[in-house]
Image (cartoon, rainbow, N blue to C red; front, side, top):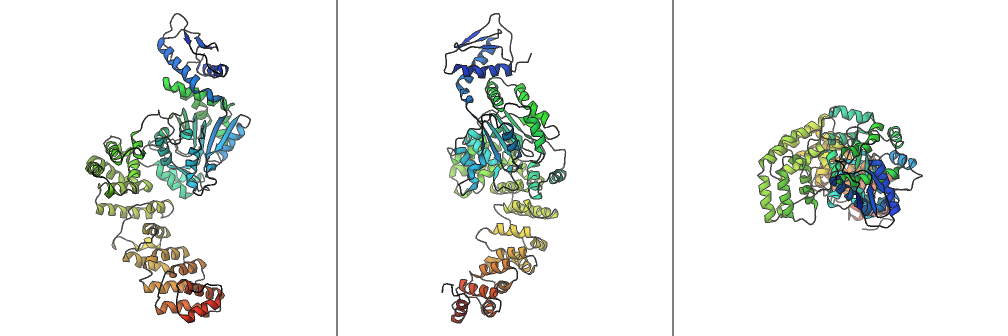
Length: 605
């Protein structure tokens, strides 16, 4: 005999009848009660005469709980007889989706790929918003992709940041996708990782991921997110995002890739012959869990997953209870700025304040603190005086060198809250940059340095000439300049000009872009770019034409070099010269005549 999943206290002497009002479509309701009886071993007899009769005598406490269950099932689960919806979010391998659809193609299931909501929209980042707004109600959710704090794929431009899911969960603006499912599958590394130290070092873990076929660019992101000492664990965050979901499946370290998942997943799905019936059972379990906490319910559903995924870092858990979360107030449009500042102050006074640093940083990101109200500024002053929180954050910074995606936002937060002196901050940026160059500077490191909201300015004694020979660092400098290409300090530009003589076209192109702000006042630079008009590398000549087009009244030496192409026997050089003269709006009558002879289709200027 199965052990009941709801505890049954001391029995009474006489059978008990719970009277229920008659209700529509009782026969279908009896079906779901029968499933409950079979799965949970409830001692009940189900009749459509308007009442239920227990076969065993049970205590009043149990009857009260079961009466609640009965009413909940009657009035909340009758829609479960409609077609079930299995939602998928496919950002990398589609093997997982194909295996589910193939296995259950004969069942009356509706499969919905949520990333398809991107179609017809110019901004593809809005696909999740559109999916949420569609009203889709997922009975099961399957997400597949690489994971490193963000779900992503190597061949897809779409991403799904965990922070986005958190905001949706806080706002309850996507309940049909996040809290309606009866189970959620998270196919990706570390999706249910906690903060326990992995048995591998970051370097070892990185190599395992590379061996698994993940490109180095993405490997850095995954390793960084896994080993960050700041913020909640992925497991805890997933439990909050999928609040109330009876079962969440994932991996607490490296998970199987899309290429290797088939054998594991086929084994697992073979243990679930009828998926619609499983969802019905999970729906009943969701109601049961509201009245009787029981790990046995979770164990019964996760058992097939655990046994099928042996050999992987499989994990499973239940969604957190649907409770109000204090940090959600920071993204609640109904809360005033003053109320949100009070929430931040409260979070920073909690013992687990480091779990909230990332959320608080996100709130302050891009915010002009000079525009805060007097009440908000009063709270900010108290926050700035929170020495315990300040010391805890500053002490964490040196531990984040391998997690730059986290370190720089934390340095920015410390700067905004006045918890770190400008000189100390600058030196920390310098040390971090030197450390980053030791292991090769590119990919994820470049993206992390680009993300710095208030970029540092290094003195002439701090910079190292070798930095400027690195294409990744030149990319970072372009990020720090911003879209308006602000001029950099003179000791920077002196090193960048040297790169114009490089044989690496990418280095030359980046240097030209960075030096655009200096072009109008730097005559030597003007001469250099004029000479690039005749480069055999078409990308360099095209870039030179673009940069020179904004130049007005060039000096005689520059004009001579530009006009030289008009008399060339090379038609390509002739056209480059003619178009540059046109774009620069040079008014010399003879040069205009020659340029229009080369291409009469050009509009006179």
